[in-house]
Image (cartoon, rainbow, N blue to C red; front, top):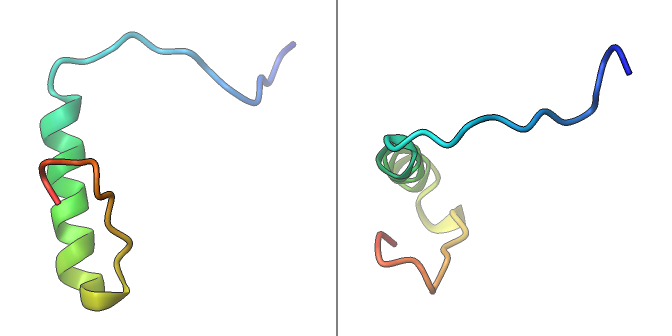
Length: 43
């Protein structure tokens, strides 16, 4: 397959912090429209 639909990549230790930062920015921008994960301690 020359153009796979998905690619598995190695885990990066900084991803949790990066994703938390992106989530924070989305919540700030979307306000009450933002969906919140009730199971996440960062929400």
